Length: 53
Image (cartoon, rainbow, N blue to C red; front, side, top):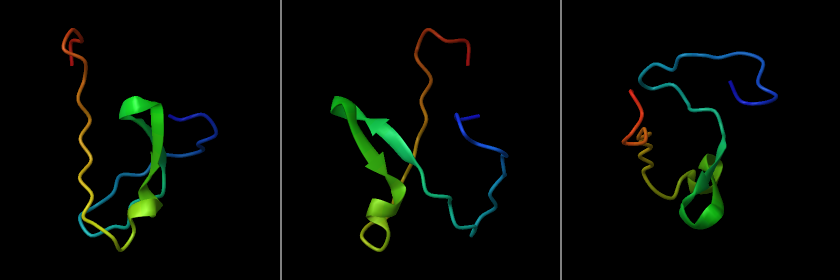
């Protein structure tokens, strides 16, 4: 759980995603709300090749 988070919640299809900020390529930060009303957003989490996931 991220630092400062107090709970987790599973989203269902159609639920509004909570706003969050992630590190992106080139060490820049990307915030979900920056794309609100502008584009479709696709988020994929890829584990490192050498991890057992």
